[in-house]
Figure 1 (cartoon, rainbow, N blue to C red):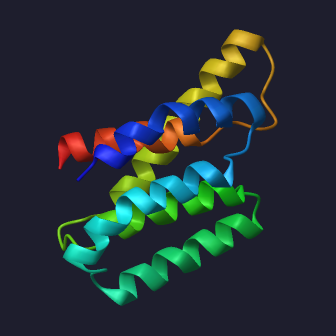
Figure 2 (cartoon, rainbow, N blue to C red; figure 1 turned 180 degrees about the vertical axis):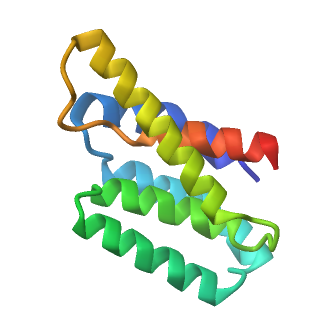
Length: 133
């Protein structure tokens, strides 16, 4: 089930760290690899998907990159069929990972970064969430 994310974690994270953007080709391949799971298990509760997409749209308007929005959308589509999924906890863990990354970058470079690559934090947060659920 999580093999597509294991395949995609390194190239997506490296691309995001290098250029602060996630190339669409990586997201297309990740979507292609995740499609069989969604086809077999369904999309789950539509209301949760709509709420998640609404929150992501608002975050995009506040400055979240579109590649990050697409990546989180793919993760949400994979997690949504499970009724035990707590998107609030996942969002908190991803945010915590991003804050820890920003703090370490600030301490390392002795200046506050204006932009941070979010893909490594998304994958780290997803890993921590799945390990604790």
